[in-house]
Every structure is written in structure tokens, then in C-alpha cells.
Length: 570
Image (cartoon, rainbow, N blue to C red; front, side):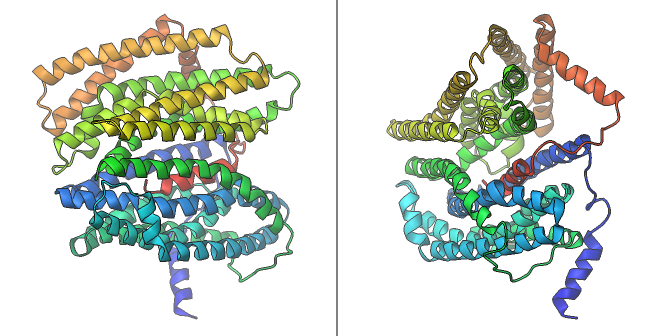
């Protein structure tokens, strides 16, 4: 037996066990796995960022190198998102799931054919990026970057393109596992990715510098792929060199891919614009902006994304009814629930921005002025957290109505606003990064307004007086909560706690958060907010009833995209 087969069977015996390969057959069990996975991936990402700062924020030169390292992710991520995520979400996963129900062997053969074609195209594009990395990098980097930083961006881009090949294979494995309702291993894979980056950086950075971190990305991407191979092997998948273009379903896969890829391209255009404008005004601005955005995105991931995912199958079922009143009711209820859950978190980030940034990113070598800058950008973008969370619901409402044109036109409009706002921001004499943060905030409000406006025209009389009143109550409660947070926060900070140490800083953050949330809940009872009753009733019913053996209503399309995004560095 060849050596590689012996190693494979050894890993199969070591890693594959009943818990990891267990099938989640109930809504509760699958939802629990996905929720816990989101939490662990987010926490591991913050731990990774803190570790990287501890390694590279010690001096201005190493911090500049780290900023270039983060910028280098953009081109590899763009290729991966457009080719792999576009293909998986729009075509492969839905078709694989359908074919698997009747013929598993045929589904696996379809996987091999599509994998061979996509990987060959991916490798060809990757080789072009590696060859032309220098002109590509020069065209998207602003004038504030030094020649040394530009060189790091070029070299790291070339290294990371290899890692994206592992991610491309891994995403197919994740899609197959989730189609068989195995969610645990795909949930563990992003944790190993972050762990690989940390381990590679720790081992190689002392000798290779920032390129040690780039090698850590390769290690993390490889482990993300390798952990899943034994499990899809147990399901029956075997790789084959199969290129049968006429095999049923192959052409259909290619036909479904372009629409989704074109839509994803709008977001990539914004990301490229963001890196260009930030690197025009600051040599380390991209890192600071990314750290702030990672904090703002956490409540969106835990509130907006789950509610949006859960609502899609119900909205899709109701969209065909002549009476759309139930469709409108679910949309409005979900918007109220998102606002009710997202607003207090936004307030906490706005008022407690400095303690939170210090607790998460405050390594000894992370300067105070950088902490303040990140905190201010967090506060600015946190204003739009409820709007950004609602986006994940509203865009799925249009998808449920089988309308993909309107979201694309809105995205096109928002992209234009983004470029105009960023162009004006970089012309400011100072505080350009704050101007870009305000642009992101304004974009979120405008985007939500456009979605609500066009959805209201599509389903007629969407907005009701009751909905508007509830929204006003929630935002009024949030303002009062902010005031109740600010006063004890300032008193405790100035008179009680020595916040130069971690334990007092934790105590200050915890006590003021409890005070603010208590005020928010009391106001909810006083103003008879229905969302509080819904949440408490749901919790009580979960405590009394055993989980129902129902299949998870979230389509695999949704889960594969979110899982793949969770695995990415920036």
C-alpha cells in the first residue's frame, strides 16, 4: 500500500468518530451547531487578530508590514469569492442536494466533474495573478504606502493564491458534508484555519517576519481542507479524473453560475475601493479599519444573519400566495426583532468602545492613539448596526419573491455612493478614516431605506402604523439606555476602577453593561414591546418541549456561503 494511503487511513482512524460525523436531524441540534460555530469562529478570529498584533504592532515598521499583509488578502479572496463561492452557492450545492436524493453515486460523479473544471479554471486564473501580481497590486494601492509595503503586498498575494486552492477544494467538501446534514466538521474547519495562522506565525515569524504569517495562512488553509477529507470519504466520495462534459447536470451548473458571480462582484468592487482609499491616506489605516469593522460585524452575524436565514424558507413559501399579508407580517416582525436585538448591542459598542477595544486588541505594544482611532471608528459604524443587520433580511425577502434585479440595482447605486463618499473623505484635511467610516454608516441607512421603499412598492402597503410606532419605541429606548450607560461608566471610570489593568477594566465593562441592559429590559416592559414577550415565550417553550425531528429549514446554499466567509481572514 502506498505511503499516502497509509497516512490517510491512519488519519481516518484518528479523526473520524461518531460525534464528529453525526448527522443533525432536528432544527434545534443543527441550529445549535451553527450558532455555536459562529460564536467560536468569531472568538477565534479575534484571538488571531490579537495574537498578530502582539507579534507585529511592536514598532512602526512591523505594523506597516502587517497592514500590507492584510491588504494582500484582497485579490486572492476576490478570486475565491467570485469563482468558488459564486459556483457553490448558485449552482453546485443546490443541484448536488437534489441529485443526492435519488442517486448518491451520480451526485459524487457530478462533484468530480465540476471540481475538475472549476479547479482547472481557478489554477489558470491563479497563475495569471501570480505572474501579474506587481501591476495588479500597484493599481489598487494608494500613495501613502511605501515601496517596502508594496513589495510585501506583491509577495504575500502570490503566496496566498496557493492557499486559496486549498480553500476551493475545501468548500466543495463542506458543501457535500452540509448536504448530508453533517455540520460539526465544517464548523470545526474554520477554527483550524485560524489556529494554523497562529501556529505558523508563532513558528516562522521570528525568522521569516511577515512572510511567516503568510506561510501560516497556507497551513491554516491546508488544515481547513484536510480535516474534512476523511469524513466525505466515509460518506462514499472518491476523487476521479472525470471530465465528461455531456454528463447530465454539468452544463446546468455553468449556466447558473454567472448571475451569482456578477452580484458578488459588486461587493468586491467596494472592497477594492476601500483598500485604495485607505492606503491613500494612511500606511496602517487598513489594519485599524479592519479591526473596527470586525467588532461591528459580530452583532450583525449573530442577529441579522440568523434571522435572515431562518426567514427565507418561510418567505419563499408565502410569496406564491395571492394574499401577501402573511408575507408582510413576517417581514415586519423580523425587522422589529432585528432592531430590538441589535440596538442595545450598538449602544454598548458606542459607549464602551474604548474598554472593548482595549480588552480585545489591547496588547502591550498596541499604542494608545491607535486604540482611540479604532474605538472612534467602531462608534461611528456601530450607529448603522441595526440597518446592516436588517439588510440580511430584506435582500432575502426579494430573493423569496424571485427578484434578483432590484437587489443588484440597489447594490449598484450604493456602490456609486460609496465611491463618492470615500473620494470626498480622502480630500479632507484630517480625520479621513473617520470620513470613510461615516460613508459606510450612511451607505447602510440608504441601502435599508431603498430596500424598504422598493419592497413596499412590490407588495403594496408593507409599512404599517404599528410597525413605525414599535421602531420609534425601540430607538427611544436605545437613547435612554445610552444615557443610563454613560453616567455610571464615567463615574466608575474616574472614581472607582483603575482601568490600566485587565480585571478592573472587565469589571467596569461588565457592570455598566448590566446597568444599561437592565434599563433596556425595564423600558421594554414599560412600553409593552412585543419582541420581549416573543423572546421570553420562545425561551420558555424551548425549556418545556423536546426538540422536534424536523429538517433544518435553512437551505444549504445559505450555510455554505456563510461558512466560507467565516473562514476568510479579512
